[in-house]
Length: 304
Image (cartoon, rainbow, N blue to C red; front, side, top):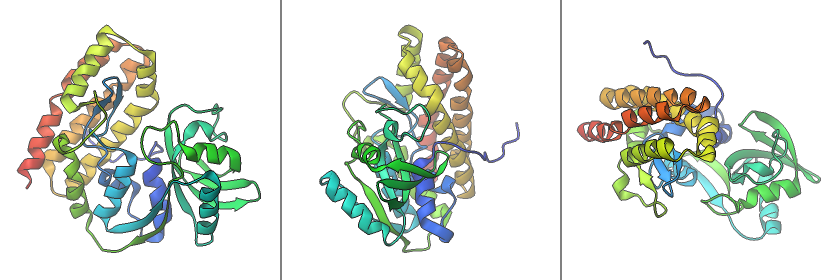
């Protein structure tokens, strides 16, 4: 098989939102995503819900990690009342667009089928406030989307999102240092080792997570888990790993790149069996995936 970099739309909401604010000096969104550390692991949240990102990782931690690794800074504010947060947003928009999130995606009612909270997090860029409406660049595929202020505030409160603080926004995104991509990618590899991270009780990491999910699919199939995998987790997990393989190769880490490329192929291979409800086939792929996490740790350790 000949590999080429993947191009196309995907759920890179915070990476694409950051790139929009970074302007002409912005790195590629794929590099931003890799520098969040998101590709380097798998976890089974509370022993049940699978995500292809590291133990203890959240998008909020990832955004801060990427900014640091790439030599950028941002001003982050959060909390307070809804009225105070809206005033803060209105004042900040005088100086330019604002990155907002986490948001509860189910309240973004310009997206089809969204009528209330679904427990899904999201990030977007607010461009302006016009009377009782917000104008938003939503990287999910909705440029210049309009949203009533009450719906936005419900989304921004994010009380159904299990990380972060309500009414979080980032402004004043600026480059402070010129850091080569190879250096930034090597910095991001700190997320490979789960031993230094904390996560909710019962959460499993890497090989243990893959094997536990395989067992659950075989013996206790769950439509909620399968739906999360086929509509979100596999898509974003595979894209992250494919981008990681590309940028690790650019950073002259060929062994680590080869492992993440193999992981991308395995995670991507889960889509068909799970979409067609072949849970036994998916379980077999997860068992192939499990040992690759230790191989990645060894490849990273050998590189330093």
